[in-house]
Image 1: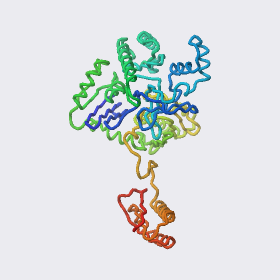
Image 2: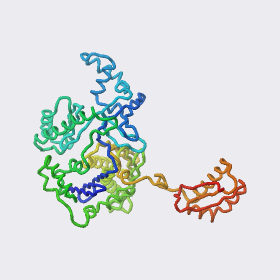
Image 3: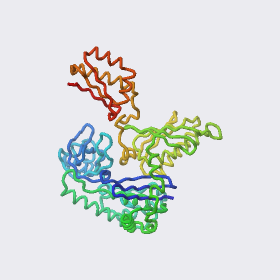
Image 4: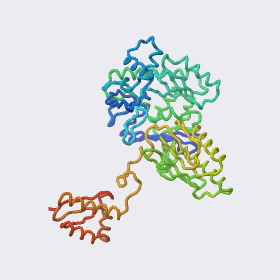
Length: 504
């Protein structure tokens, strides 16, 4: 069973979702952090790059967002390209053929044009936000696509009769030229629940269009629900045993929200005000700290090593202390299956997306490789809501997969890049840094033609090394450059810092 824990403070709101007491999802909201994903902006096209079919759009952020032609809804592209080609509406077949040949980003948009866009990916590293004009508005039971006339039903709803019933209700409820995707939460529910959800989302869409007309460029004109209500919308269902919230006003707000959508679950909402604190009682902070670690221990004694780079995430599976009671092949299979289950948990909790390569322990049996691949794929489908594409186990025991990115990873949300190693995870040895500093000192003196006394200030560990091991080198350097080097140690300097100054 699941539990939802909501911890609200003046400085931060945190939401934890537990599955069998194990942390499954964690959400944060602070006044200083602005979430862009799913937000709508009035943007202005700042640059068009036909070569890569991309428009850069000013949305009032530090970096312009980028809108690829694949993220432009077909109706808009057709309308704009048809205008450019000057074809008659009656020539629909001719239009479609010409558009396929002539479609280009510069024929859809013009420089400095105002457009409505939605953020689908947060800015990451040096990249701006990824944008779309294929808009989506998520509700409790349905995701409305106000400008994409397509119908979809969650794959997790497998019963054919139920799928047909839901599709019929949806078709009767949707206005012309709008589309929607029915969510898993709608399974078995009455038609009025779907109609109420759609009505609310259509009203929201009309409000967005009105705001766009009078908004300034770069202005945010719509954002998703705040983190507590968003978590309730996504997770509060029949599988939830209890929802604890430690703030009375937040509890009242959540009850009001739930009463409109799933009133049958309202009794599951409980106010928690007992010591110890809510997150302390369920050891949430300890689980968060583990999720920031590169090493994850498995119950059997095996381990996972998770390394994330800008390009991809690499996961290494090791047997560790696990030796097993059966033969070697069975031991490896058990470790791999346990690792696959834990990897799904870690991908979800850490919010890891993009390209992922998993180095499972190599197995000689083709049947065991297939069993591992199917088990991993099944677990992903059942426990992870984000789309993923999985390849079979390679000859080297590797599984390559992609997982949809959504927002920042847990590490990006809670940590900063180390100022000493700049994210490399290692520091150069004291000897290496000492030699680098001496080389840079020599080059600076020659380049700037420094004479007389030269002050060289270094971190204390570098100072100790130079005094005890390279004092003679400094004397020789002074002779060769005809100057005097005054060496000083400073405990406030980081490993990569030093200062060279001419002393007057």
